[in-house]
Image (cartoon, rainbow, N blue to C red; front, side, top):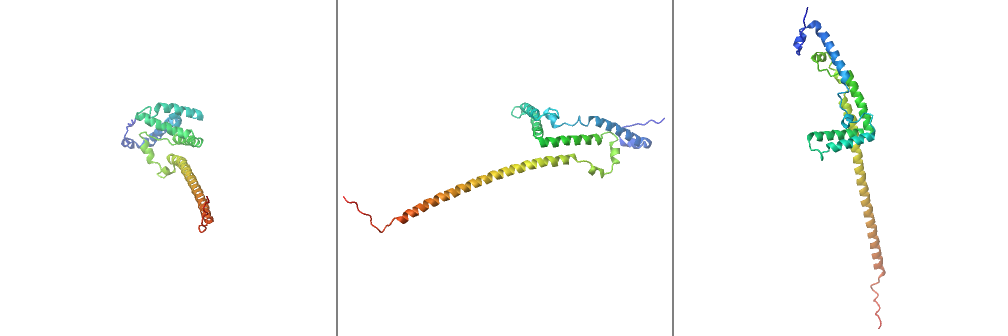
Length: 215
């Protein structure tokens, strides 16, 4: 009867060739099953931050935001935890209060959940053995969720900055147009004044002596 001793060192595992592949497979299946059952439960979403359900209406989201803001606003609570909490609340509200950003965020949650269910992050003792058998090129083929999020939310921030820049440019242009109109008006008034002064001067004949008044 052969007794196998399993410890947290890969050296002991490598000394059992007949059972190496079998034990690796069993360990991976156990971890995979566990990850499937808790993939979504470990994900903290903006809905969790605002303490609302994923089906919450916009009014419910707004109400939850104001309620939590009253508790964790820096003016009311000076602790570091409250500061971080308020930042998370504000970020969650900015995303969920807008229809387009909320739609993209909901889609990203489903994508991330699908990734966690199908590609479990193994932390078992046999993970190093399993990872050593993976083709290095497969790493680049996996879905890069962080890059996807950066591109989509980066696009939203870029659009917002562009709109702000356009608004400032419009205001500046409007002010310049107003200044130009005032200048034109002043020039026109000044021109009329000069015109009437010159006309008045031209009608006065200084060579003709004025008649003396008779008493």
